[in-house]
Each structure stands twice: as structure tokens, then as C-alpha cells.
Length: 276
Image (cartoon, rainbow, N blue to C red):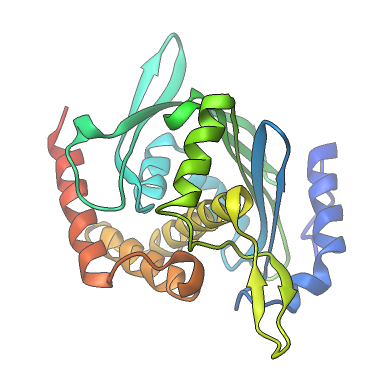
């Protein structure tokens, strides 16, 4: 149940979504109160995650209402190699280097220039948006958006959107990836069930966006979960929590062993703290 009446139309709409998803949040295959959806049009792709998190709204608001914290969130993702907060023309920017799922020099990565905006931040509603005009492989118009409202019993209902668009060149690049390296990868949406009851999962572009939406959502959850730990322990706690959460979905998200992931991220963190 919502902790207090929403004070905006967007907060009210999110409350309506929470109410409509109540049954699916309680009964699903994700081992947590979570609902995932994805859509694809001719030029863009979007993944949406709705979830109840076991943190008070004030904790979520304080944790995500700071661009430096977002670098800690985004850096948990396998493909994030570097993140730095800058200011440009009175805008807060996040320079995020995206690369391979292994250690690599920063010059080999692609840098996304995210604009960070707090669209709303009150005692009853939070909305954060990160947007980037250009991305790798001909992609564009990236958007990571988080909305949140307080629930009772110290919990929060959160909606995260991961969106990007692509043109002809981007579509060719993505199709090539999905036909080669990504040919065996799947998302979370069940398209059908075999005769023995085993699920078959969505593939292609929707599978790709669902995997990354889940990775980013789990990064938010891992960051929030580690925020109460002593500062000297937070990095390790975030890394361990994110990897443990992704391993709940090995068919979709397993890429490397825990020790390799932790080692890679510790070295990337050191590089980030020592580079200017």
C-alpha cells in the first residue's frame, strides 16, 4: 500500500501501475517482487522494470539524487569501464566509458555523454533521468530513467526505464552481433513452453535490452543495499551483491566467474580514482 497520497499526476500514475501489477509482483519467476517488460519498434527499443525494494523512500531518494552515486551504480555493469561526473554549460554530465566484458584500455572503449537531471524530488515522488544523444554502433537517444514512490513498511516502489534508438547502421551492427557473439543469448520474457514445460525465452533486440535493463536495475539495488555499510566496505559489498544477484539468472546474465568479475572491477575502480 502507498504510504501517502501522491502529490503529482506522475506519482499517481506510478501508484496505479503498482496496484495493477500487485499479483505479478507477488508471483513470478524472478525470486523477488519484480515485473519486466520490453518493446521494440522500427527504430527504438525499451526495457522497463517495476519492482518493490526493501529500502525506505528517503534512502532511495538520497542515494539516487546525487550524480556521483550514479557512477557507483553504473560501474557495477560489466560493460562500464569508467565514469566521471563533470559540469558543462551549467549541466551535470556523466562521462561513461562503455567497453567489452573484460579488462581493456579506456582508449578502446566508447564514451557516452549522459546529461543528469533530477526531474522531481519530493517526500512522495522521485524522478531521475540520464540521457545521451549518441552511443556506440550507430545507436542514439539513450535514456535511463528512474521513478519512485514510498510504500508502507519502509519499502519503495521503483520503475526503471532503459531506452535507446538506432538507425540503419545501428540495426546492421546489432543484427551482426546477435547473429554471431550474441546468437545464444536470451532475455527474460517467455515466448512459449516446450512439451516438457521448459520455457523458451525472447531473443534478438528485445532479449538484449531486457538483459541490460536487468543488469542496471540490479546495480541500483546493490548500490542501495550497500549504502548503510561503512564507506570502506561499500565497494566490496556492492560488487558481491551485484554478482550474486545476476547469478540468480545464469541463463540470461552469466558471463564470467565471481573472482574474475571482482578483480576486473577493483582494477577499474583503482583506475577511476587515480585518473583525472
